[in-house]
Amino acid sequence: MRQKIVAGNWKMNTTADEGQKLTSEIVNMVQDEISADVQVILAPPFTHLQSVGKLIGSSKKIALAAQNVNENESGAYTGEVSAGMLQSVGVEWVIIGHSERREYFKESGEQLAKKINAALKGGLRPIFCCGEPLEVREKEEHEGHVKQQLQDSLFHLSKEQISKVVIAYEPVWAIGTGKTASAGQAQEMHKSIRRQIAEKWGEEVAGQLRILYGGSMKPDNAKELMDQPDVDGGLIGGASLKSRDFLQIIKSA
Ligand code: 13P
Image 1 (cartoon, protein in one colour):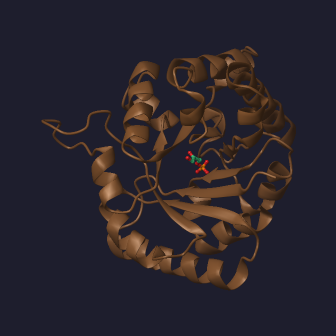
Image 2: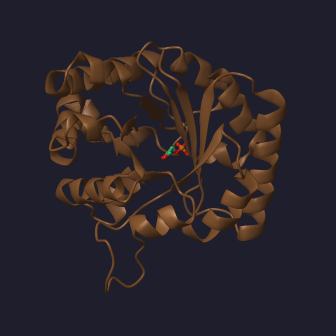
Image 3: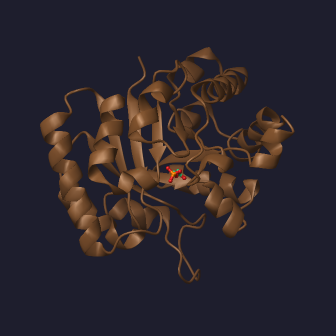
């Protein structure tokens, strides 16, 4: 059985105080109400990583993620943050390749491959995002699109390296739109991703890989999505900013 993961991507939301309040609520609720074996991950903005990390403390159930990392180790890259810096403040995971980074910050598949390398080298575990825009889905080219994203940014990794990666399938048309992929659409794509991984690295690696779904996951659709055999959890945007909703989603896992 693959351990489920429920990760909250706060994106560019919350002040430091709001982030601390939200974290405290989540920490308390998870402690009091979650007995199942679920890995919860919080990805606040960079500025909150240390304060959120302190509140998470030694909780085994909750881990800290960054939303981005630079591909270089150090140097003259004003405004950027390296894997080593993140690791030094207790970050364990990093989101790489989110569609917002691909679209607004023009991150290419090649650059994302470098970010994956930098994260792994710096001791971080990547949550690699993939997913197709609406026009690609409408042309029914979504499987090929995602396959290309995996090939561009992950296929250079060794077996050992890919085993540290979690993949998040986030159809762009479902992000922040309230439009969720149906459980059937999610399962179909997750199965296809797992098949790509199996073809490249073998059945054992594919069988252990966690594939999360992201895109308008909410308390009322989380269970159906996460009940699918190849859906191993969720990457949650909007609903992760409300502690009750986030907890409901964790419970669905
Ligand atoms: P929403 O849950 O707000 O649709 O965002 C999903 C997402 O982009 C998580 O990374």
